Image 1 (cartoon, rainbow, N blue to C red):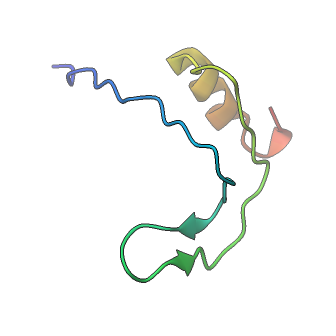
Image 2 (cartoon, rainbow, N blue to C red; image 1 turned 90 degrees about the vertical axis):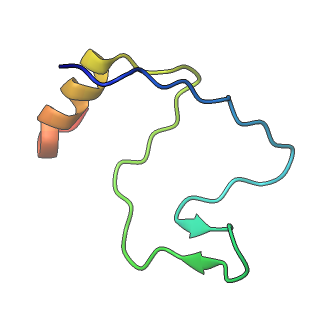
Length: 61
C-alpha cells in the first residue's frame, strides 16, 4: 500500500531565511545542534536523488 502524494504550496518570502530557527508561535527558538552539508536547491529533488544523497552518508553528495 502506498501513501497518498501530498502537495504543498511553494513558500514565498521577501525577508531573510534562517536555518535552524523556529519562528512559529510566541516563543521563537534556535535548533540546539549542528547542521552539516546544508544544500539549497532551486527545484524539487526526485525520490531517487534524495535516496542517493541519503545513502552516500559520510562520503558526500
